[in-house]
Image 1 (tube, rainbow, N blue to C red):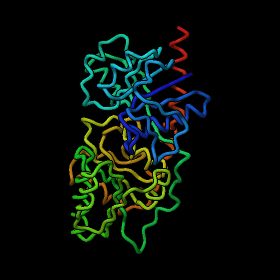
Image 2 (image 1 turned 90 degrees about the vertical axis):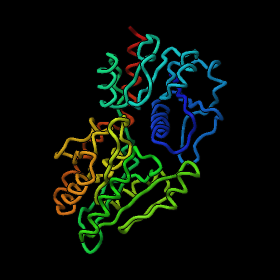
Image 3 (image 1 turned 180 degrees about the horizontal axis):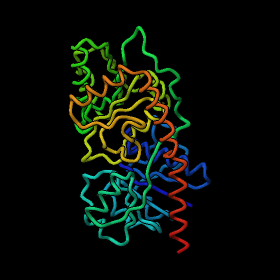
Length: 329
């Protein structure tokens, strides 16, 4: 099959990374995968195996399926020669009412969070293209012991986006440190513009911290392996799939997270901790893991077992099976 996606760019965003990783799997499975962007430039941070093209080439390209996650780009999808014209729904905040009423549009949901939202709000049963992460690209932790060193709390450092909730994690760590807990905060990000870079440069914290900038994506497992727990405080109203939680689980790092993009992944007290989006809740849960190596190991190992079901290879196969079944009906 010849498959394609429309992206606004190929910078390091979770929504971009999703399709580059998925595209590599499609290529490995013997399909063609084309990423269309305004300038046709590929990523410099990721080894993409597919093809790059520009928006002006869409109409002249025969495709079995074409999709985008961006509402404003759907007219290009609908005007294309693709047999399957797909809106891959990843953000609950998008204005998708018209798309949901269009019978020409096929809808994919990136998570059960989005699937349930579409069903409840629009009565539309989306196809569950849930995932994912390439588990083989990550190495799991080997030790959960914390001795003669700080307890490392890791969080996504995209502080320019309040929806990510990094400030909640920072506040929780500052309070714990003030209470005498030997805490260190580990943040990471690759800023995508000057404003984001400036915010990182100006960042301060009232506890020991390290802010890693521009770490190679293909070696993210090195950062996660330094963590004793990973905390995601994202806003459940907006997030579809939680990439950072998936990465942490692929590294067998115990996770504390809101329900934002984690309904498929996180089972409270079984393979991690579900938290309300309050500073005191994050403090309490961090203390739980701080005090128990047994819990850290339990949640970390269970999380790794869970995330294997959401490997991109599994998701890619479900998508191609769906397309083939639709074509045969």
